[in-house]
Length: 216
Image (cartoon, rainbow, N blue to C red; front, side, top):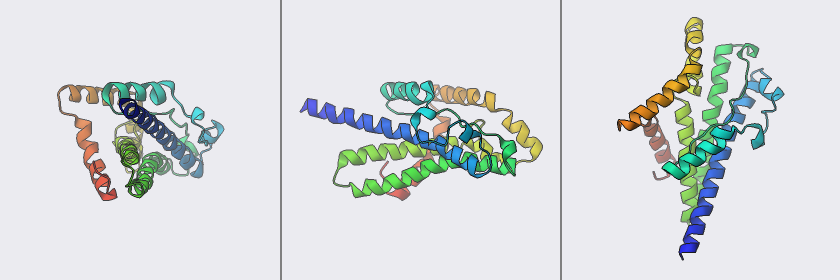
């Protein structure tokens, strides 16, 4: 019985890790297709208009980090190689950069909606529902975390659509420092027991899961 339970747990973990991993890939491919549709072929020339995971894997962000987080903290988070794009190939570089950025989170929300359909179809299989519930949650986390308007997250470029040209250039110039600041905020606020990022992303995640009829 214990062996059977452990096998089911292991297989569930493998399924969750695999589905979340591919969700990250789809997120990046969506950026690539959006950029290409809007006139920039940088991603195509880099071979990123592909669902082949090898084209998008970042050894640390896509493999090592998610595994470390799963086995140490019980949750998965990660990232793939950023999709290259040249905003000066766009007709409207602010608008089209924002739309390219929006494509990633939008893809994760669409994945969550699609998987919620299967969640309800498999109501007789609790283990399948558990896997789908977790993957739905992780896709929504990927979406709403990336929508935070802090460089270099997608939300910063979406916000950039509404800024003046000078403000946009100053804002996007913070991309190199932005991730350092973001992780510093995450670590410090968690140590203080505040979880500031969670206060931003958890309410919309909970709302969408409720609308989808998926318990959380």
